[in-house]
Amino acid sequence: MASALQPITVVEVTEAIRSSKDVSPGADCIKFDDYKHLPDNTIAELTDIYNNSLHCGKVPEVSIDAFIGPVYPSQLRTTNVLRATGSLWCRM
Image (cartoon, rainbow, N blue to C red):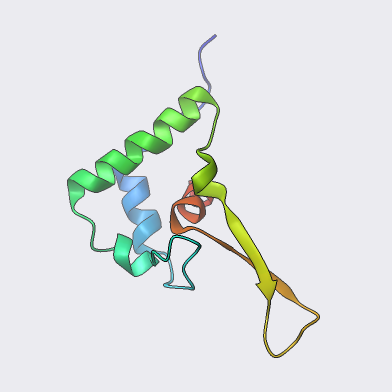
């Protein structure tokens, strides 16, 4: 059975990185600003990882790993922090 999903392009990944705000890093401590300095061949490899995930129907667990913590000063609100790779995955 052929997949109805179109492959993710390097242009889409580059645009997702470019348009991302540099917010708190996830558990891997890599910020979006770090991704903005990746060479083209590394972005192409990241694109391949995303497309392989689409093809296999599985997202690498490390990409969607997140932690939940309180938003200060309020102890009543919480937020989750995804790794940048997982957050990019959500933008595709």
